[in-house]
Image (cartoon, rainbow, N blue to C red; front, side, top):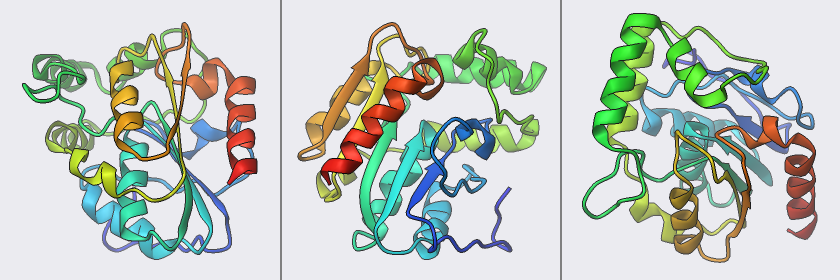
Length: 225
């Protein structure tokens, strides 16, 4: 895991892939070459600052799930460096509230926390991926997973969306049980000029479930910017 004593320099790469919770860089093995840092989600603010300091100009950030949250915050910290954003199965706010009905109920997140405490992060893996063969999964220590889920419970990026200037592609599956598809529609509505692609009968990992379609979609998007 990246911590305050570690750093990385990625200004020689133009594409940076950011994994999600309970996964590692290897989850992007099926995508085009790019830099894939190991992300610590226990403090999104600190991690976004670290990434912002590391990237060079003309960087394309491709973030999946919580990695997409880091990508959003990084784009605001370094608007002159981030050429484009690709947000995959991402939400600005994971937990639903009276003014944001598009997340999951807090009770479901807390139930997941209990399952992870008992059985480890494989409880999340089975929910997110079903029977998919998935590269790059990691056995996140329970204590670390609890810190990251606590961060997920409180994060709210809605006020930042209108400030995003980079061209943004949003990809989401309509059968996602981790991040409801309504979250993607909310992102598209609130990020000016963004492009939304919803994949039918796809869950939380469209880059695994529809890899050819996913890769072509990104190529088409990048060719336009």
